[in-house]
Every structure is written in C-alpha cells, then in structure tokens.
Image (cartoon, rainbow, N blue to C red; front, side, top):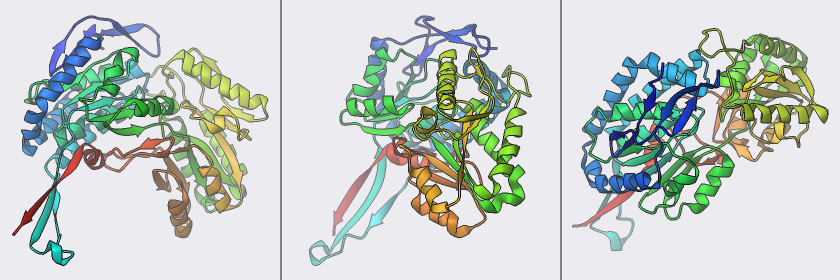
Length: 476
C-alpha cells in the first residue's frame, strides 16, 4: 500500500510542507494518499539551489554519476513490487503492465549509468587551408546547466526516468514537476536519489498546480525545458520558454499497416495489434489507433481482431488477469465515449465495445470511421482503434502521413523493398517493421515530428540535448 503522505523534494531533501494534493486510486476513486504541494516560493528556491549546485554537479566525476545511477538500479530492484503497486493505484495501470514499467525504469537508469562514462568528443582536423596550417582542434561535451523537467501521468516512473537519468549522467542539476494525477512514482525516485551523494541542491521534485508552475517554463536561470504531454500545452510552453533549449515529446495518432503477405500469420499480427492498441487502456502516445489492412486479408483480419478484442478482460488493475483498467479519469473516459458516439452517428461501424462506466471504458474497435472525425484526426488516448482497408501500398503510406502527428508507425510485411520505402517516406520519428508502433526499448532514439514534438529521448540522445559542444583550438 501507499504511505499516508509523501513529501516533495527540495534541494535533495524531503519537505512535508503540507498534504495539499489528494492522489486517488483510479479504480475505486477513493483518496489513496496525500502529497505535499510546492508553491511559487519553493519552486523559486529549488531553481536557485539548482543554479548554485551546477558547478559542483559539473565537477562531479562521471564515475560518481555512474555510482549514483547504479545505486538507483539496486534500490528499484529491491522495491520492485512496491513501485508496481504504486503505479497500479495512482495510474490505474494493470499490475502486469505496472511491473513492465518498473522493469523499464530499471533499464533506463542502467543504460544511463553506462552512458555516464562514455560522453566523449573528437579531435577535429582544422588544416583545411593554408591559413589554418599549424592549428589543432578538439571538442568535448559539457552540461547545458540546470534543467526543467515536466513529466506526464501515463508513465509516472519511466517517463520521469527518461528525464532524470540523462540529466544526472550529463552532469545537469534539475527541477522536476511530475503530473499532479500521478506524482507518487517520481517522489519515490526522489526518495532513492536522496540516499545518494549527489551535490547538495542538485535535484528537486515538486508536485504543483499547473498555474503555480510558471517558473518551470519562463525562468531564464533554467537552461533546458524537457516536456512530455499534450501538443496544445507543449507548443504553448515552447512559445513562452525564452532562450532555453526545448525538447518536446507530444502526442501521437499511430498507424499500423498490415500487408497482404501476412495471410499466413494473421493470429500473430492480431496478437501484437491487440497489445499495441489496448495495452494500459490505450493511454500511450504510440498506442495503435489506425489499422490499415490490405483488402486481400481484411475480412479474415477483422474477424480475428474483433474476437480478440472482445476477449480482453476489464476490471480491477490489481487482478493479475485484468488487461483493461480504468482511464486516468471519468472525464477522459467520457470524452472518448463522446468521440466514439460522434463517429458512429456519422457512419462508423462499431465492431465491439463502446460502453463506459465511470473511468472504465471497454476496449472498442470500429471500421469506416470518417476521415474528418475526432477519432481519426486526433489522439484518442484510450482503449479504441479503427480499421481501414487499402489496396495500393503507396496510397496507404500517404494515408498514414495524412496526419498532423508523426511519432511512430508500424508495418507488417515480408517485402524488404516495401519496408525500406516506408522508412524513406513515412513522416514519423520511427518506423517499426513486423511489430506495432507501440514497441519501444529505452536506449533507442525516440521522438516525433510535426505535432508530435521535437528532439529525442533515449539516454544517449537525451544526453546530447542536455550537453553543449565546447571547442578547443591550439596553435602550434
């Protein structure tokens, strides 16, 4: 179970300033714990502490940064089930999915520890003309400085880890705002970090209201803003961020294409699509939302997929057999219900699901969804997917690109030429061949284009954003 109350972390230290934020059990709706809320004065003090600590953090040797990250790995392993249960309660994540996220938390810190000691540079040949004769050049990476990190509700542990671990590896101090609906995971990470020998003031983790978090975006003492969340909020923050670097991981509307040559393994593809579309109730930026299936196998695929979706068990996320848990709130489930109803009224065919009770929404599958409906154009962020027929492969690629989002896409095909053509043509951050776009491993470059954001996560790539190149020129 969760503790009765959790402090925030200000300059490495726990502060139980109040119990102002009630965190609910997303399945029962009851208050599960209370969390201290930081006001503007605490946020200002955290930024000042991060600025003051930055020289010590920059001087903190790479091997000691690695030791900090490895300590976190050990402690997360020891607290594995506690972390999984916290996710299950505060995010409504089915327990099996919660354990998967804890595993990814551990992977992310482990890879961060490895990367901490291999941040390098290069020797540059400057003698490109007579005037440069006798000059030598080399460059190294140095920390960008204090970072502002804002994490979302859907992966309270791992998406926080994808900001915290590279910041430590790069030698950056940071202040973090976790999502108000799911702050506990980040605070447990803070509890573990407080056990380490990070320089005093190196980190703060501060739940706060959106209105009270303005300094996370606008304060010029912060040198980088890393935000994961909705496109509307992300682009607004970028416009207000001033001179700091900005990294955005925003929404998606992921498509998965199933080619005609998959007739011999429809059951396998269906299994993967069900996972990609309905894993953690579809509340993932790379959840499969649009499924394009070749006409030659469409009818068989639709029958198999519909049957598989109907079999998904919805219920208490603590139950080991539950696949569909609650959405983050009843209001979000009601919004999705409205979108589905709008699509059906305009001609979409409901193949299964569609019912809602409170925050619980059935796994839902449709076909013939209008191309200008919310369910087709926007990010559904819930347990719903739509089927579409195609006959022309290149036209199907155009259909995938006809979206304002561009995070990842999946393609099931045996044809290498088609796979490479998709990689060349699809306007997305990543193309996954013979699996769903929902697949991710934590060291790969992950991020999107268009309204899906800018910059990349994945430890090495996040570290590149959190560092700057510093050149040295020597004349003989």
